[in-house]
Image 1 (cartoon, rainbow, N blue to C red):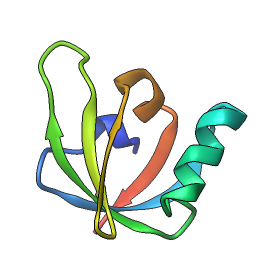
Image 2: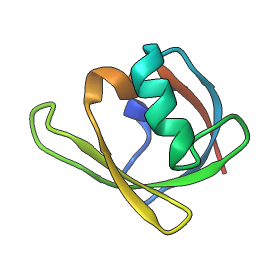
Image 3: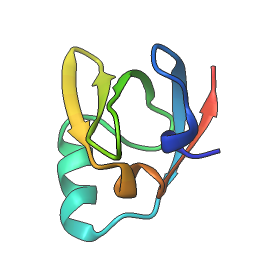
Image 4: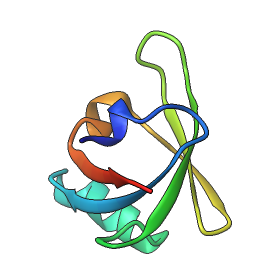
Amino acid sequence: MFLSEIESGKNCEIVNAEVGEKLKGRLFEIGVKRGEKIKLIRKSYKSSPIIILVKNTFFAIREEDAKKIEVKRQ
């Protein structure tokens, strides 16, 4: 299952992220790494950014990138 498929308000755990090196570095800096638990706060309308909560940090990610982040539900 991918991050783009999770419903708003649900928790999940990162399994793998097949994104570009630049984004992978940014995600790692805020704590998005394998095994990290995150919460999908909001999915916007029509492919707008997806808002996730990682520890105490809100982060916006494009839907096309969320389709490359594999997660498992909690």
